[in-house]
Length: 71
Image (cartoon, rainbow, N blue to C red; front, side, top):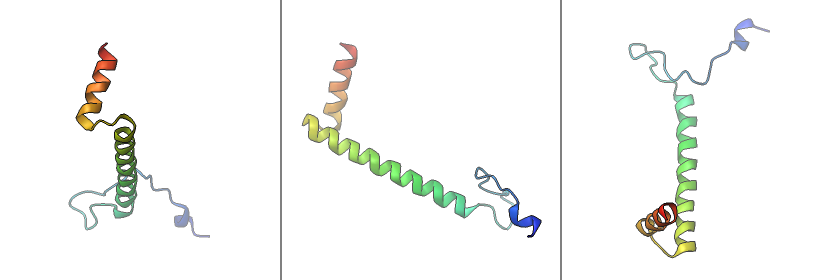
């Protein structure tokens, strides 16, 4: 087995530098964007569920939360 086959490349390394031929690690950025999209979908589902449970829109839910928190 080749020793270079097992070389470790950390996931946090997004790019080599802006002056190189490959400035961004597109595979790492694609996984970050995929995670961001999934979290956005969960947030949207939570907003819809909160509206369905309270019968209030986003601003109304914020008012309910502030009244509960302050008072």
